[in-house]
Image 1 (cartoon, rainbow, N blue to C red):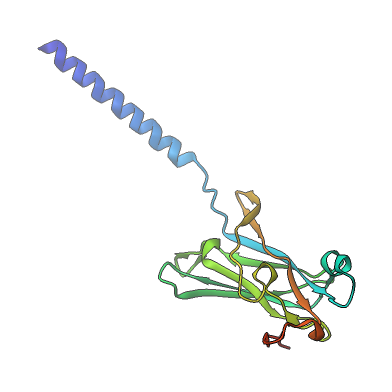
Image 2 (image 1 turned 90 degrees about the horizontal axis):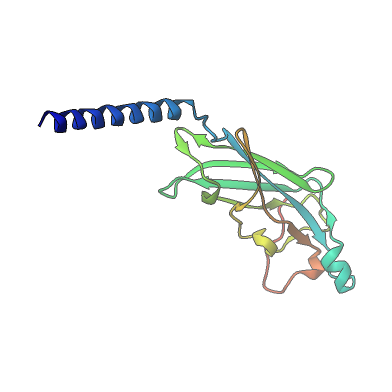
Length: 173
């Protein structure tokens, strides 16, 4: 009987040691949740008046275009909206906080879309890659303890004469 009690006591002491070691290890594990995430992509102009290969593969960047991001909470309420203008290469980088008013923002609850074209001559949205209707950031291209980057697009605008009939959504200015 005394032997059974000592075995139980030894098991309890061993369990306590394991729990204490796990708690100490958990306290030392750094938080790998970046304070922001970045959404990056490109806006380009496609010219349908050229041959198909030029149309498909030689789109030119559209500097000055604006791309927006809208994020919702788990109830579907908008909690964040941001935007960025494209640089000379047609590239945008939108920094999004990982938390807004105590609410965690997940990239999967965000929608990225074209807001305007920087070129009046190439100002009709296409929905390629969801540029018109929106795209959720899902391609994680970089992750470190202090940074996460998602790629979207590329998004395209086209010439007014290339617009499909019945599709009246032109880029705004």
